[in-house]
Image (cartoon, rainbow, N blue to C red; front, side, top):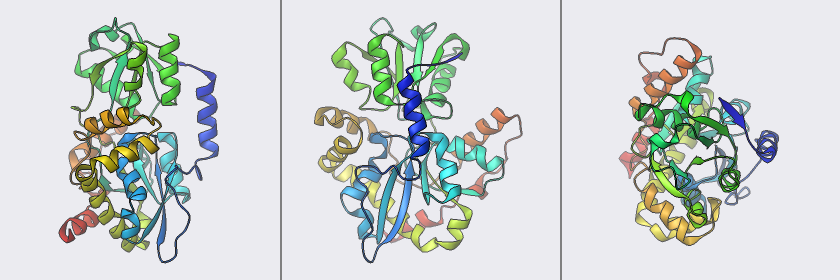
Length: 328
């Protein structure tokens, strides 16, 4: 059973739909002479996209000839429409949604993967000591098609709990999720660090981490037509992304500063906690593995009651990352 909590969450979602084509992150910049402008859409504010944050803040994209403008789409369901409309050229988010669109005829391809596992933690009330204690409780997720939506299903399945035994509550915004738990509207939340960590000050605690569960989360997706017309741009982007992921590990202070600036939680201490968590989440090599993509297609096909493709390689183009790795 799904319930909608907080009118503010609905307003936020409506606003995100209206702003999907131009809601720039704090790190976005205007056009720069001699650089190719590329709009990259990402589906949630959080430390998980620190590869993009450092790429813009620390000049890695510019070094590779790109003026990358970040558009916060606020909702996973907006990624494919934004790509197809051309309001963004590259999208990064949950592969399941893109896979579902491909099965319905959209010409999309996955070109890089920055997060091959869930980046979520479960935070909740003190009387919830384990995942089993979520039975009969209300858990906030970001809505259908979001990472937390799929994450809750995966977590319950891993522990042998039927999804019907837990009440899923859709609360779009991470801050609204925290507020919902503090008010008692929900008993627990699924969110990425550092969003959950801030609730410790109000007496809540971490119940579980999903970082051990495979999931094609940070999937960089483009349209097939964009690939055919802009291969040079994508080569530059892939090279920058390889450097971004290396930067995250080699420059902890700069990365923590970027997280504090753009993740929605400005506390340096919480940003540092998030950084430590994401060291186990971020890919060292953004090559797209077929396993997580196959799982995304299987989940999308099952939901629509259709057979999943047996070979997903034609939906993956690793040529840009391969060239970037060879030149690094």
